[in-house]
Length: 159
Image 1 (tube, one colour):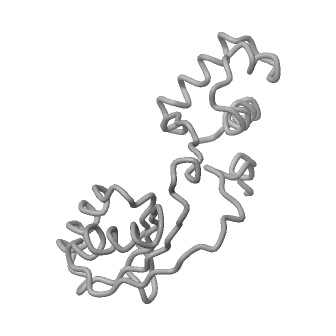
Image 2 (image 1 turned 135 degrees about the horizontal axis):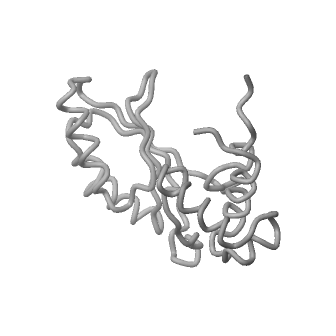
């Protein structure tokens, strides 16, 4: 989808604060609140805006451990991949999962309260996933950067 400068400005403002009202946006962007509302609705309908959510402080919720888990499956059988992917979406501790090229099949990020909690997640959630042959875990020491999307995603595509 081609985005014009006004769409990009709206999206950039929403990335900064998704709770801004259309009136607040109209003070920053040279459009009326009604025109901004129309554009936001169009961006939602075209799935450029997938939804809105609160960003919660995981440490305040007791989730002080971030674990990156590399998972290798027993085979690359299409049915097994599908079964794994359906199951991983139901694992409550998993915050992201990516199908990878290279040595490991999946790259999974998990949030845990502490090492004991991760041991439980490892035994009860991850190792029980369909077709798992190997789990290799790495523990994040600290988070350096985190954002839903970088503002650079709003730059016009180079031709």
